[in-house]
Image (cartoon, rainbow, N blue to C red; front, side, top):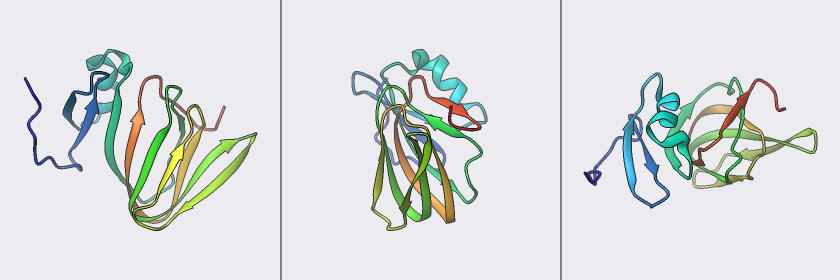
Length: 134
């Protein structure tokens, strides 16, 4: 069955693009990320597109070993922090419409200066999370 065109609420759902380019809309739930691996074959070759709003620093760092991540600022003011060459590299993102490209495999986190909303386009297969960059 084909995905309905919409409209869809980005606060309640995300879009998942399959390797074939087909899109699936999936509702957020408390176990959303765990469900992705089960429902989409360990998320191999898939891309997650989601809006995420946050007011506090992320509790963990993450990295995506299977591709670069595109992160677009819808509103807010945030330091996007990349772990490169054994140190933090901070990219301030404060102009709506600007974006960051997080290179494949680079640990990153976010520290907002104000309530922030971003759009993430994430190659999700093998995504890792840690309290500190490893």
